[in-house]
Length: 358
Ligand SMILES: *Cc1c(COP(=O)(O)O)cnc(C)c1O
Image (cartoon, rainbow, N blue to C red; front, side, top):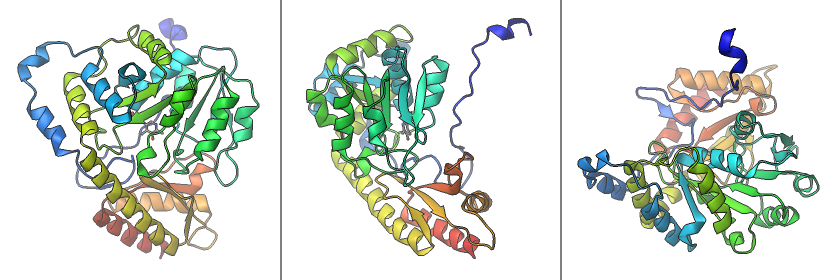
């Protein structure tokens, strides 16, 4: 119809629901605690009259705070509007080859969407039956790049750093992107590998462990040359990505180490308790190193399959005002992804699960 054959058509990513009203929200891996009080202070201290000016396109104050935090140079830091923006720029910048970009068949479901919208060839590599990574495939296949979420989402499973290092070393001619959205909940970061590996870029978000999903702040750490390439693309798309409020809030969040430790440790404690409860209710799950658990149940009613159970319990929880994530796709449709909330929220969840299991 008219212009329509000229449209760039895509099947978009579907974000988790953001229901209104009083619900228990365990569906998008947000932090159940508020951001650091220093964030509130930083926002209060902003001069409203300064909003008439463009923000700093270099994001210098924030980048230098991040650089200091991780002991890298400021020119090794790239910031963006959430790690989704950072990852999108990474796909656009580094994946311009002919061979496919590789990532697992079960992982963050935005990767194939970015590849599709930018026309990047990609190939998904099946996880093993226990939902762990199959490293050999990444070491022996021609590729234009590799993307690994570690710990992986939505499985919650962490791959050992030595395996990540082997993959980076086996692919000196490709950029290897390690998406560490959940690393702060007990995983081992690849950041120390940056020193010796130019083909590594590590991506982080402030949405989960720093309780700032609403502010939209994410960043990447890499070699200074790689970060320069990334900035060249960014400044060819949109120079002013992060706004003045987000820059100030994100800076305050990265500087408040004590508060960050307090809330992540609380989430980890609650997660370990939740694992015990889920086990008692006969769920099975990998050893989550994230702020969620990806749990499967054999079924609680006669003839009920794991996927029937997941679909029924997802709906049943929703009727009770408790939102978890359910992916209606093969393999993952046997699981519920449950974000770790406060202890009180988890108590409500387990009460409801007990009713639904009967
Ligand atoms: C949540 C998440 C992101 C995106 O986070 P934002 O910074 O909020 O855009 C990226 N990757 C993974 C694996 C995630 O789970």
